[in-house]
Image 1 (cartoon, rainbow, N blue to C red):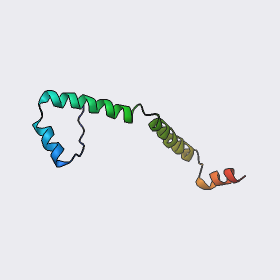
Image 2 (image 1 turned 90 degrees about the horizontal axis):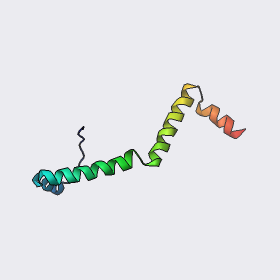
Image 3 (image 1 turned 90 degrees about the vertical axis):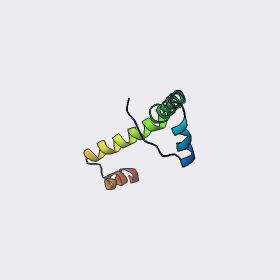
Image 4 (image 1 turned 120 degrees about the vertical axis):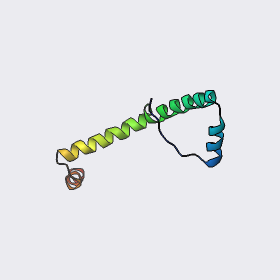
Length: 74
């Protein structure tokens, strides 16, 4: 597993520091699941990735904003 760093307020950081290893493991698993749901399985993220890839592909193929405007205004 990899580690990531997130910012939390000072009170939460202290409580986390003082928590037992078992509590940290349980909370860490919950955070892992929550992040996975938001970042991996969220269909909106897939759509955004699709749009980013489409934009890059169209740019690579020479579609400029001007050409797109011409197409849309025809």
